[in-house]
Image (cartoon, rainbow, N blue to C red; front, side, top):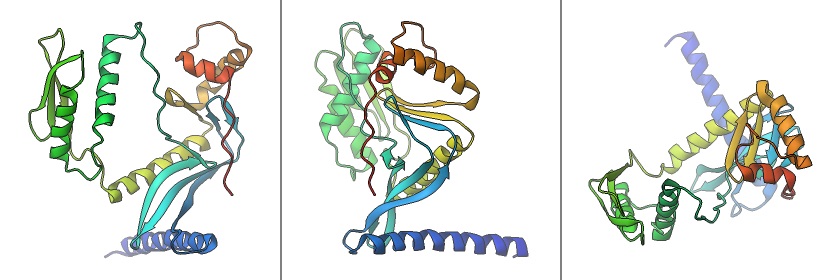
Length: 256
């Protein structure tokens, strides 16, 4: 093994030791071993801008991941900017007669999957079969639906003879270890966005990422939205995003 390879390996071992030491230190600070959970800061930034449902979160920013110690294993369970969760449960909006047929179908699928209440530990093949059965029970919109294989469901929508194939590749839910790696990578990504003056918006329509070159345009739209200006918005495309800047939500109370 070359000297460079040995140094790289030692550096990774040191990094892993420092991360675990930070977690252990946090646990000691929190008190009892039974309360084996907390948050670990992954990145910080004094740049960029983060909006939470129409309200600007003041800089500097701290990007952290939540963790839980379970039987000696560290599981990461969420991303936070200044203690605000990046991916809270999405807000579902009631459908209206003006919504497209495609949106009605997607909403019906989402509702059926949620209603099936399939346990997270269900094997992927069994999960696909259960989803097929749940889709087949969608009233009014579905003629029939079933699992074709361990990874594919076919839906026949009412009034259409064309099959709608839904394919699920790999595991439908990541293993805890793999999910932890994804969270850590994503936390670093959010930190890198803010470091280069990017604006991040959490809205009821999802997260919006605005590069630094278009932040002045975003700022102009936010100013007009706050004033109630009736105009065409190119950055805040969803009416509910504009509405949030007209009636911003208060920031959640920050945990110490």
